[in-house]
Length: 164
Ligand code: HEC
Image (cartoon, rainbow, N blue to C red; front, side, top):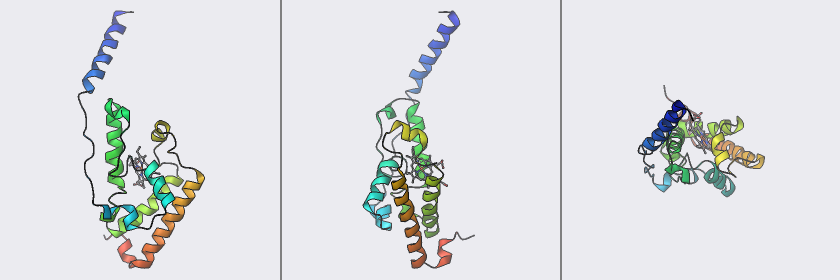
């Protein structure tokens, strides 16, 4: 092995060891149960179990951390997904959103799945059984449409639009 290759390998191994010491913490922000999606909306059991199985690891307070959470740089990637995912949509806190935002998230859930953006590709590769079947998608779409219709029936139209 040439000297340069050896030096590079050494640097890579050293860097790998050093980054193990930079460890973001787990999410500990837990919301009251009443704010969860199945308390705010009527969610059929099959839809709820799809959400728990395919979305909750990034979009809830109930995150199941895989073993590679303990290995850098995987932990950073997971941590980013969780922080960003929960900022966009936290199924455990949807009841704390203003009505217009809940209404919008119902539409976005449908759109993100239709466009194949959710669940995140790398996640479905690492976690088998988390990509959605056509039936699961249909069930979610039907639920989201029905939940939006229920909001339209219950609240005045201008409460479902963001105030300027
Ligand atoms: C591996 C983590 C991960 C999983 C699993 C995941 N998401 Fe996401 N989701 C994210 C991240 C990160 C973002 C924010 C960045 C983006 O939009 O790509 C996001 C954004 C979203 C948004 C907001 C998009 C917007 O337009 O603002 C919705 C809605 C969403 N996800 C729904 C879902 C649903 C429904 C599932 C399950 C079927 C799911 N996600 C599974 C990580 C995830």
